[in-house]
Length: 326
Ligand code: SF4
Ligand code: SF4
Ligand code: SF4
Image 1 (cartoon, rainbow, N blue to C red):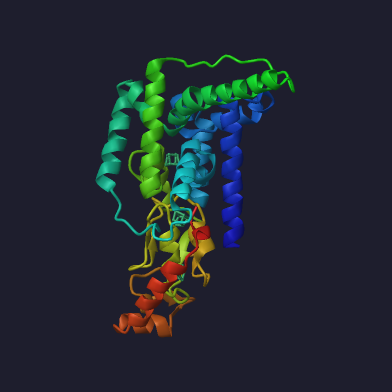
Image 2: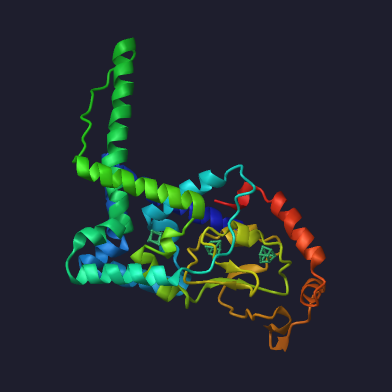
């Protein structure tokens, strides 16, 4: 089930990113209609244009399911996933680990954006709005690159005489917008290469807004401490670094619903569920109205006989294939 959810999420994200990119670059005119629909679904532009239908719909979806917007529809989130996936492919030593939330930075950045919106300083809003950032990248980097690649193929056809395709104009809107797009791409690539979805849980105002709600979402990620063997595979796979295995808690405000953790968990302890029954002391966890019986592993860990577990964790870490991380 976890694997199915993860694959479905990845397919949805790829489809959204492709449709939007092909529309923004004008590469395939026939797909502009579904691509435009995905553009209209973007939260901050919809809210700024007082198109409250999409905004309210996403808030309700987040309350029900968590931040699925961040794992499927947001093009910048998908771009970050590509970089973080590339950085960890074939690198077993580069697993994620739990990090404390950077709440001060998150709320200061959010406050600056709110003040900028109220003061009508839209340049600041456009710099941090994920859709505007991706739109700049698509128009100033992807579009000229596609046009230049097309011209190379067209000239090769003319030179060999094997095919004939007209050349297209390589358009760069302005030098300033090109520089801003390149800087945006480099910053996004660098941070996601090193820290996965860190930008999503610090600078992005949409992520902060959805995070206020997703911490209370009805369906959420929960660890069943009776089943957990502390193998840490979920923590290593979590690109938001939000799984705290000391307390068996998943920080719902930072979780971006990628389903990596559920797919990585070998025992089914990490579940996407409506139940909320994590307690900080695993032996005190209440299961169906009674106190959970300590398993051999939880009892061993709590009594201090955790060395076997620790050894298992380090050997498991080496065994984890990069299939669990994307
Ligand atoms: S937090 Fe922001 S940048 Fe990250 S996926 Fe969500 S909307 Fe996109
Ligand atoms: S807890 Fe982490 S790995 Fe699991 S769905 Fe959320 S972000 Fe992904
Ligand atoms: S992957 Fe599953 S069993 Fe392993 S630490 Fe995470 S919740 Fe526990």
